[in-house]
Image: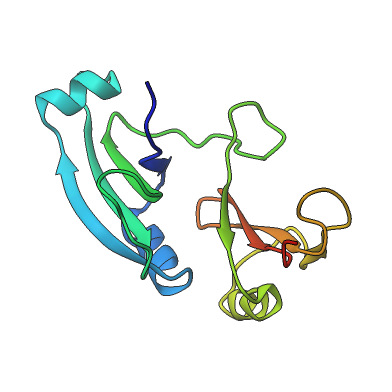
Length: 155
């Protein structure tokens, strides 16, 4: 029986560049960092020669309860060599991570000033459960789609 959600993981091309992006611009902090080239890692990832670095991140001041919470894991594979995929949101298997902000317009301007690429400026949500909120997509250093979401005042 599933009892929680531990983490979401993205494979990145440059772990240092990605950690800097997520920690310096998106308010994450490192929980754990580990080079993994051991037998159990090779077995569960399914690559006999697996050698990778994994960094677990969490949003600052966000509590972690046991293994339940929402961590972000960034992985850089040294072996086998990674291949660049087309990770556009329309493609099957593509994913995105939605991040909550209390002021989407200020966050958007801050990230734009730091060179972050956006697919649009903040858009007002006009229908559904989140009507009255705002959202927009942006890209991390590997063109992985991230979402800024400012929830409405729920009634």
